[in-house]
Image 1: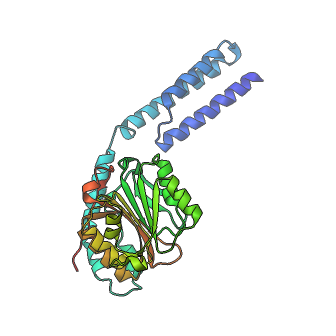
Image 2: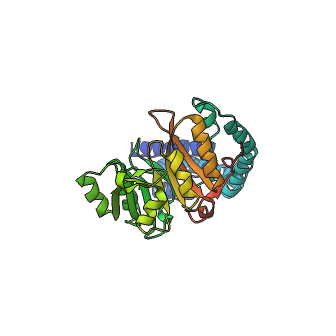
Length: 323
């Protein structure tokens, strides 16, 4: 009875090898061969099944030889490398760029989101792109946070007592950044305490085109001056439409490595601001349409000068188009 179980087990093994052969993948064939051979050797002293085991071993050896030949022709180490595949994709994307530009330039109505989102695509590939924050509204796609310099500054515009992004970022990077957070309303005690524990300083500030401390209105660059900040590595923005008028004046004065922007407005407003950001040498590496409404979308950018720093790979620029 035991011998029958052994034969059944080896038949199952051969079936598995056939599956691996037709799948075209390597599943540790050398190790499997050694294991099956040892299994056969341990039971070869039983004369009643020796002949059957020898036949099975012969068939197994033949199957493994076919598999090795298949792998040497089509498997790892043969064919195009990742770099070669990437270059093919890059060339294809470059060829598409003029059509993307023409499409974006033809957006004139606030409802033409089908043109806007249909024209979107990454300009930079980030191999270590991760979504930080909550699953759902509030999370941001970021490029390789582990490459962010120690003690560099993150500006968060629009806290709204919701700091899961900052908490997860600091946990992921071992409290690497110095955080400054702003919101039109005072944050509650719990938010301020939690923010402080993760190296954060918060301030009531309504982001505006002009500064008026009496009404808690500030430009982004005046907030940087207020805290004596000259370099900002990461800029996270969710200010419910104020980005349309307040972002570009700031970016014309400060170069930020990465921007995580939730943009609100009509399709033509999206296209205009994206074009202006593109002309300042920021490259899109991710976008995510808001699940609640088409007029809101998360865009993630990396500055041209920071692509290599964060391990990115350039694909094709198209947001720096001309109207």
